[in-house]
Length: 487
Image 1: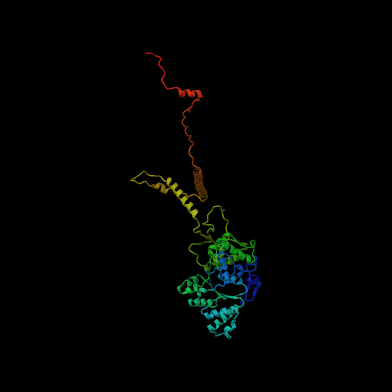
Image 2: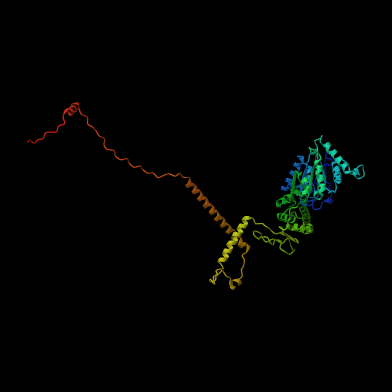
C-alpha cells in the first residue's frame, strides 16, 4: 500500500485512509535506494496507476459511462495489462452518491452473485449468509433484497455500480442473467454493471446467442500493452510514487530497451522483471540498473516468462560471448569488460522505414552496377553477351570493406542523391516560375503605322467680277470674231 492511500468504503458512506506499517522486514532493496515502499508490487494499488494513452482513455470512458448512468459497460485486456488496477482507480474517483461493489472471484450461479453484491453494498453481512437468517435464502429472496436496496437509492439521488472481474469465465446463461439484472432497475438506472475480463470476453459477446447482451453495451474499451516510451514513463512513475529520485535509482536506456523486448509491454511482467533487477542492483551496490544487471534478472525470471512473440526475438549470449556482438560498431569505442555472466541482446526486426528501404535499394543498384563494370568480358561466343567469370577471377580472394570504410561511402552516396534531387526540384521550380511569368504577360500586336491618305486636288477658285464687267459679258452676243482676210 502507498502512504495515505484513500480507498472507498464498502458501504459507500465514507472513506478509509490506510497507513502502511513501517516494518523493516518488509523492505530489502527499498532502504538502499531510498524508497518508502515496494515500487513494483503486484497488488492493485490505485496510487500507482499510470496514465498511459491506452489506460487513460479507458479510465475516462469508464468514469464518464458511470456518471452518465449507462447500464452495461465492458473492459477487456490481455493478462497482466492492469485491468484490476484501473477498476480500483475508477472506484476511488467516484462521488459519495455512488455505491460500488467489486466482485473479484468468479461465481457459478446468480445466487452467488447476489450474495457477493449484497455483502459488498453492506445490505447483509457474511455471517447472515453463512449461518444466519439468510443461510438458505432463495434466488427470489435475494433479488428482493437487492431491488429494495436499489429502490431506496432513488429518493437520495444515489446510484450503485457493480464491477465483475474475470467475466470471461461466466457462462452464457449467467451473462444473460446479468443483462436482466442491469435492466431491472427502471428508467432511472440506479444499478449499473461493468464486465471486466480478458480478450475472450469480447469473443464470447460476439456469439449469436449473446446479441441481447452485446446490444446493451454502452461503453466498450480495451487495454493495450505499453510501448517503449510508455515503459520508460511507467518505471519512472512507480519509482517516483514509491519515494525514489533519479540520483538514487534509475534504469539506463539499454535496460529499458531490454525490458521492452522481454516483457512485450505487459505491466505485470515489467513489475516482476524490475523488482528482480533492483534486487541484483542492490547486491552490486549500483544506483543505475544497466543492461548487464537486468540480464541477471532476466535469466532468473526466464522460466516464468511467456515465450516472446514471433516478431521479437530475444537472444541471451553465453558467459564467454561478447555482449556487444551483433550491434553496429559506428561511434562506439571498444567496450571494457563487463562483470556479468550473461548479456541480453535483442535483434532488430523491421527497423527500416520506407526512406531507408529506398536508400538501400538505390545503394544495391549502384553497387551492382559498379561490380558489373569491373567484370571482364569475354569475346562474343555463339551469341552470348553476358559476362563470364574465369577461373582466375573465381580464385581471386575478395576482401570486403570494413564498416568504417563503408559508412563514409554510404553517406556520400546518399548525399549525392539528395543533392541531385534538390537540383531537379530547383530546376523544376525555376521552370515553373518562368512559365508562369511568360503566360501571365498580356499579348499585344506590334506597332504598325497607318498609310497616309491621298492628296486632294487643289480647290477651284472663281475670281470676283465687277458689276460692269458682268453686264458687258451678258449683253455681248456670242458672235465669232471677224476674220482678217477679205474676199
